[in-house]
Amino acid sequence: MQVLKFGGTSVGSIDRIQNVAAIIDEISQTEKQLAVVVSAMAGETDRLVALYRSLGVSIETREYDLLVASGEQASVALLSAALRKRGKKSTPLLGFQAGFVTDQKHSKAKIQNIETQHIQNLWADGSIPIIAGFQGVDAAGEITTLGRGGSDTSAVALAAALGADVCDIYTDVSGVYTADPRICPEARRIPILSFEECMELASLGAKVLHPRCVELGAKYRIPIRVINTFNRGECTVIKQMDSEDKGLESPVVTALSHDHNMILVTVHKAKNAVQDYARLFGPLSDKGVIIDIISNSAPDAQGFFDLSFSCPKEDIVNVETLLKKFGQEYTVRSGLSKVALVGTGMRTHSGVAARVFRILAEQSIPVFCTSSSEISLTCVVPSELVEKTIQSLHKGFELGNP
Ligand code: ASP
Ligand code: MG
Image (cartoon, rainbow, N blue to C red; front, side):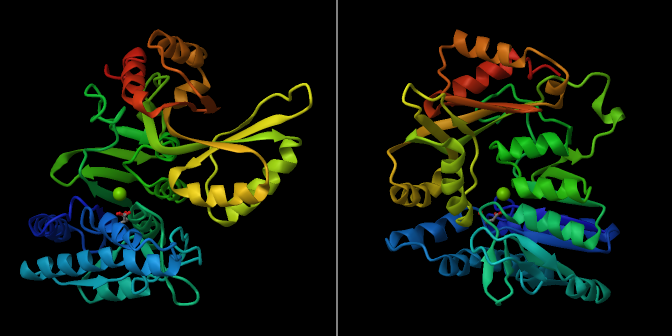
């Protein structure tokens, strides 16, 4: 049993949709229980969002979900038609028809349950289910979407619900790289990656996979393969690593990721960090804002602090609305990006931070704030220096040499 997911570029034109139909046709010769999850055609979701924004009205999330979910509706119908052209039986399904039930947080919904009976019935009938990713239905019968990039999560959630052996994510790159190859030409494909490292990379900005999809893969122990639709020979397998996979010594740093999409908020003259964070973060979490790096300065002579936190740029309106109510002086700094180093080897090796700051100092790259976990170190740098930061860290940690 196998779940395949095809991303937007893979279904970006009628020719490409026919190419995907050929791949499905081929795999279905040996795999009888196949479920296919599809994204909207490349650029389509962006186009729909831009149309909506061009009205200049505030975003009403029920409308928004209804609109953006339509991108996937088109691609499942077209892919099913392309399969029919090849004499293959398939059934296009919207998220709700495939049994995807979510919570009610429009535009950021989480999958609660997948009723797989319909899919099982289609298999019994010899038909391949072609399912719209990124969407579901809430308890009230409203169409919901999972957040941008969410069809990866649809696919892995479905693989978990069906008990599939593997979830194959077909995309336009040959896997996960040591850094974004467009920025860093020396970047290498990583053949096997642990869930843990991949989760860290995805949540720190690597664009290959939706972070929640890796989380689900880890939780249900479903290996995820990232495969290039246009060159199926090479891939990255993301799985629970055993000692054999790791080799004799794991590298200290496995990969770098970056994220342009952040703002740094500083609230000035706070009196009680704990209380103020509680008052700020409660309402932000109700809006689904994901808070990232949190730090506060030491108190000044009068006992005042500065509180800082970072969050995604698209939440700026939510954040500013709340800060205005909060009644405290604040600054919001944009034009910043995160660059993160990730590697399970950091657990057992010292000196990573020293090496990072030495490399950055040599290049005169300023760092606005940092955070770290057991297996990562993140630096916030000016967006215009991201490329330079990545290239020098990639070289400094010798990630280009296997
Ligand atoms: N079509 C949606 C997006 O562009 C979902 C996805 O492709 O994963 O965000
Ligand atoms: Mg995607």
